[in-house]
Image (cartoon, rainbow, N blue to C red; front, side):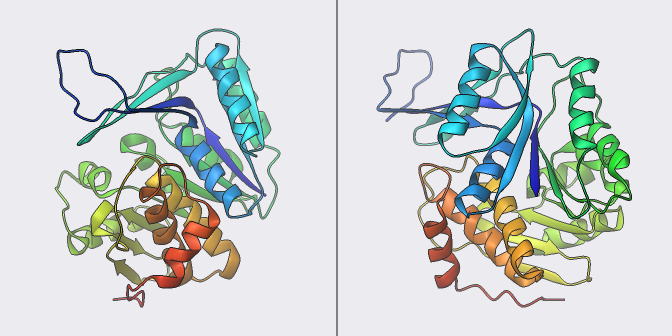
Length: 308
């Protein structure tokens, strides 16, 4: 079974504005409300690909109940912990000539609630996959993902981490199967600016040397890089298409990679599935369906043989 964890899920309020101007009243031309958060996005795309999974996380207040309702209405399976105080966040995504996001902080998660999640995770079994994705509230330590992995050490559970800064770095010594920084996050960790796939390669290898078994670097229109545990390096430009919504594209890439790996245990196939799912999400107003993903996969023109 595959499990995802989203510590800070949200309602994503996606607003279209034809010509956004600051300091005046703007009128929307489109509006959508979606359950959001990186782990929930991974769960949604996995479900779209026909892969059973369960989403863990924390919800609070009427916004939390709406996240649960809408996620289940879309076919998702969840086992959320409901907090007694606070409100799950609403993240505002403005689509105009550029994309602008305003992400809220989210509710306070105390030690008792965190312990309830740890108890759920302690029941995972050999062969399960756990995806730890996204930010965590300020009430929790940056060592949290690493602490979870330490608790599960030796149980034969495949862990995937999609996070930034110390939350990701602190997980590396625990040997995650896959980490998925984007080029900006990877560059921030090492104090460099990474604009090309070639520039990203040595830093992906450094992150692998720090403990990650596989490092998948998403680079938007530049494509992606995979530093595999075999020592091979895969690089590819992104499939061609019109980007209409970049929100969740990286999460879709994670889901595609996991799906591809579980299907064939082949890194070239997993990498291609990741690129296809991420691109399909970017080319769609919502998270991509299986047909959209496989259409890109079947027509993909990139050379996915290892370059090293």
